[in-house]
Image (cartoon, rainbow, N blue to C red; front, side, top):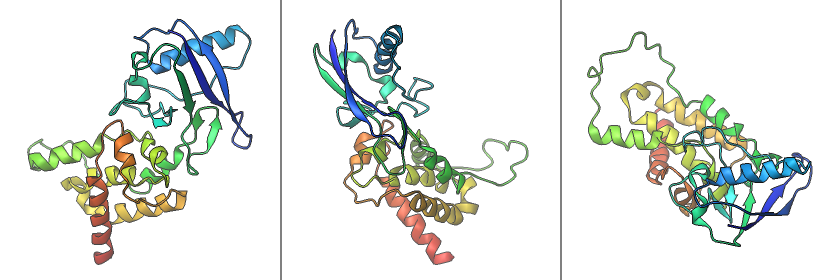
Length: 247
């Protein structure tokens, strides 16, 4: 399969970038999208050209590193799928594929398709954890958690922090990411002692990082590879209201 790729190339954060055309052949349907980029980079290196920089790590849809806009869609055309899980069978012979980095003020481009997403790390550091001294592991059944609550908490915990929600949002809002992290711990007994300071700290840090406001268009939910729902944003708003009433 032959394809035309239009890939964003940018030497650094302060350097203007542009889309560059690359033709690639011998792409097989069973290749993942990142494997296709690997093949392209091998060809560029063999010709003495600079390879394309892009983020990746586990390539199993777990780490959230594979942050690419593909034909205007975060992670590409498949729903519930990270870029590393996207296969080239989704494309056709002679297709043109536009590949760009995330576009958000809080995610500045480092080089080519790589962006600085450490803003998410700072939001987590502002409260996305449990700081109590737990000591030895408690007996599994000593703290009972209802099935529905446990499943809802684990659904929120599935967020991999890739930033697709930010990239898809017209306001570059991080509300879906933050709400998933807050929802996970707010629903479990272990997270209750710090729930008020957690939500205040994380939302304050989110605003400080320069993310936009949420306008509930649902683009974040549609783009999320783990299908995190807008219900978590509702829960985040309730947690903020609760924190403001007891402060």
